[in-house]
Image (tube, rainbow, N blue to C red; front, side, top):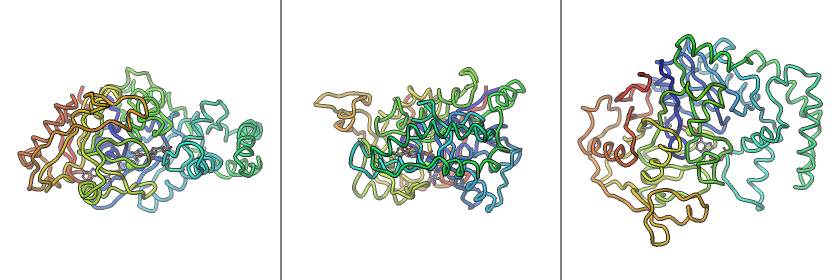
Length: 430
Ligand code: GDP
Ligand code: IMO
Ligand code: MG
């Protein structure tokens, strides 16, 4: 039985939530394996919009098991708030439908504060983070001083763990000129939420191993995108986790052989939120057109997303670093009505032509896109549910994208609605 990993192939917001929700009909288990509530995944079902940040997009389908894996950083208060918000929309999340890895690292208020402080200070690089505390929480995880979910189950040892954590944070805060943290306040922050989150705690690697042995289908839901990957992205303008498909294995506690098919969610143009290089960015009428038609405002922070043409160089690279077998091409409808469409097919760097994104920050900032211009289409693709409904020029555009990136289109999305999706090749098929 095939298991599928969904990852973003660009800078996030490619439409992962919509595709994961659509695919989850065919899956038994849906697992988040990295990131945290910096993610904002939007699903639209019969006109009703659901916004998920921490919860896997499978939670809205009754009967599916949702899992938050060890690779995620979990803000327990944000989790409770999200579960309450969904309950208000009629989606019930219970310990029967959601399990969380006992070894997941927690995001605390001090992580959020540090994230916000760094972003607002002039020292260091402004990344344009979501200020959710993601980076500082991963730093503590790697620094071996994180508080983990299981620590809430043993309040007698929690105080020692908090002391250890603050032995790092308080000197740091002193140096930054920020008020020190009182260990009692952190204890209270955690103890007050323990009863609400502990019922969801479980041994996730064992659940997934059991599911695999029973031939159940597992869908791994990535957050962010391959260009925000801490290793393969546009460092330092990245998030603090690995976002490529390999992370699905370590972030959930399964072997790499469990990952059968990697679906890269790919927007028909490019967007980015926050700072950092963006070779095909259009700070002009084209960018405004894409932003307005595509409603390109962040789900999490409401920030305006930067917009530009499709960059085939970048996606060709993330097809390789991400291990992508096929893509889901989304938001094709946003290009409807454009007279001509540009696709970046190469870069010029210091007078030389190159076919990849160099790793150095300065070089990334200097590359200039080389465009191929293709004819647009006047007809609408919005809401199309079969190839037959697509104008010939739109099909040509899709074929060109496939050829340039070196991966086939497995799914095509033509609106935010769940069912406005065209299946070309089933990722779950063995
Ligand atoms: P994610 O972070 O990858 O899950 O993507 P977001 O939900 O942050 O952003 C994608 C936005 O595009 C959401 O508002 C979706 O409802 C919307 N969307 C997804 N697919 C399509 C599509 O094919 N066409 C249009 N017009 N909107 C889409
Ligand atoms: P989804 O899952 C788009 C960006 C932030 C910032 C950088 C680091 O919805 O696609 P962080 O808070 O993670 O330390 O911020 O990463 N970023 C995203 N951009 N979509 C996301 O998630 C993102 N999550 C983080 O804007 O540039
Ligand atoms: Mg998003």
